[in-house]
Amino acid sequence: MIIQGGMIHIGDGTVIKNGYLRLEAGKIAEVAPGPYNGEDLEILDARGMIVTPGFIDAHCHVGMWEEGLDFEGDDGNEMTDPCTPHLRAIDAVNPLDRAFQEALDYGVTTVVTGPGSANPVAGQICAMKTLGRVTDEMVIKAPVGMKFALGENPKSVYNEKSQAPMTRMAIAAIIREELQKAKRYQEDLQKAEEDEDTDPPELDVKCEALLPVLEGKVKAHFHVHRADDICTALRIIREFGLDGVIVHGTEGYLIPDVIAKAKVPVICGPIISTRTKPELKNLDRRNAAILLEAGVEVAINTDAPEVPIDLLAAEAAITVAAGVPQEKAVALLTGNPAKICGIGGRVGRLAPGLDGDLLLFDRDPIGLLVKPVHVFVNGEQIR
Image 1: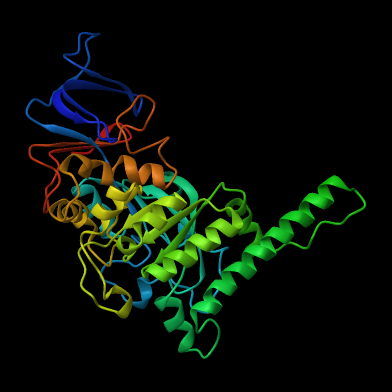
Image 2: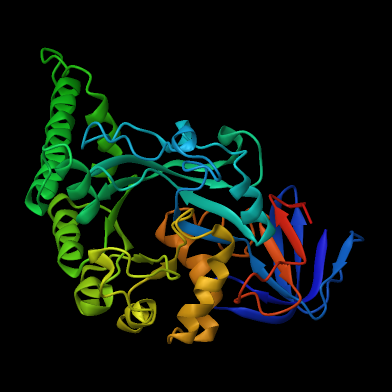
């Protein structure tokens, strides 16, 4: 199929004002300016429309806290052990949760979903498409990240149980202890491989889950709000040489230079929020704009179901009203989250070789409940 005549937003800030896009075998085969003059193919007339990559929610819990259910559909926090790196989001996601259809309706074709923030080491995050019925067939990458959490949430959960961690010191200590165990486990495995007289260590599934994090193959996503917790996350990232990501980063605007110097990206959000707990008392909608101005890579998230996933583009619109340049808004939902989450080889941009996930709008897509006229996932037109 050829999509011709629209204003094409590549996803990295580049715009082709009047071009075409060719889809082939579920992938993007060509993107170019001007009219298409090749072989006869089915043509979708996009004149007067805006074409973007499918939107990506860079951090949410879709399918793990199911819509309209209580305990029966609450599978995001295993609050029995503060260290659970071996838990996998793919084993909890219900792809038939109605939130997936609502995401598609408003152009969110990829979600990065995973455990909540009850545990200092919470478990494995996955990136998946929102079209489908079987998680295994929808996954882009699993694990795409390991969830760590600092601050108020793990403190509150385990204070009620009168067990560690009850302080920020204990939260950081538990994370360090588990990473150090995994590092020692890694060294023992290496010794056993190099010396046939050395027995390998006994299987430790928690350490096994953390090995790809130590090796930089899986990103370390740190749930943090306060500036001091952000600095703790940066400290741990530096100490262990992790490929780190700051999630939420509510007070990031207070230390943008520190984050920029560390070269760690921030997934900002949810933007649509009130100051519902102490860590959010300094919430400021200028956060993303200030971080971008400082040179920090930024994406936007809903934290769904904290904020309904169909409000992702509305959140981007709020950041624009608060100072994010209009021309960078689409990238906050496409190329930026794909790069930050390590899935840019599949989604996030309109470029040859990437998945055929794209949206066509008859108006500015960055706004409140703006539905795309057409939605493509894996090259398939679903609307």
